[in-house]
Amino acid sequence: MAHTSDLGGKVDIKPRRMSFPFKNMRDRFFYKGNSVISAFGAALSSTFPPGEAEFIASVRLYRDKVKDEQLLQQIRGFIGQEGHHSHQHKRANQVLTDLGLDAVRLEKHLEKDIKKYIGRKHVTPKFRLAMTVGMEHITAIMAEFILNNPEVLEPMEESARELLYWHAVEEIEHKAVAFDVFMLCENDQKYLRRVLRLVTAMFTIRIFFYMIALLWWSRSMPSWQELKGFYRFMWGNKGVITNIRKPYRDYFKEGFHPWDHANQELVDKWKNEMYRPEHDLGVQKAQEKAGADNPHGDNQNDGDLKGALA
Image: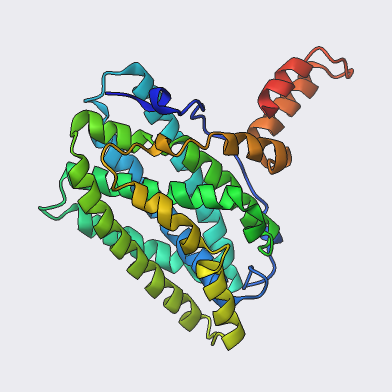
């Protein structure tokens, strides 16, 4: 079986320990005051901690069957990245809840749903991993859209925007890991295509009802202008749905692999244009170490610090 690196994925899958100043967020409707788009973002964020915990669990069910050292290394990177995403979105969800969009309530609702779901007889390890592969495809194509069109998130409050840029980068880096594990162990691409249809329907319905719940709990009645803004955000020329339709359909092509969408350059784009080292705990730790080792300000530790910043 061809692995990620053979099919175009030349990026390392290394977790970055980021931490964003969500306490700086002041507006409940953090996307330019639009309650509907803000509810959409909060609904998505609410699903990430329990959803990504399930992604990790579904891949771990197969880890002992994987003997390829490269893929095992990628699995470790995948687990680390998803774990950090979950932690940061938990922090964001708490702040959103404090502002009046109860993302924590929805997060706990999904946790309960997943516990019930994995206890059912028909929910086999194969089905769980196929669900993960499908969701990884959806998040990867949304990530590509965000990084190709960063201006779409410009109206969003800074902390939330920085979170989504970083999350998008790492979704691209590890987008083929669950797929490669599934194909190595199950080798059933027709099954993946069937499950993606189910995943898409379930995910769309859940996000819709989560948005309604958030708006209802916050006693917010969207204006006609806000609804039109949400329509443009989703289906306009720069809309999310408009721009992910084609890459979504690519999944159904015979022999598809996630790195058929060869977009590794987006990782470098983020590093060069969007990355904020002050939000990187790894860089902060390296700076502290450099200062402790070199209290007189000599430049002998510059190489270590530059390595951390990369």
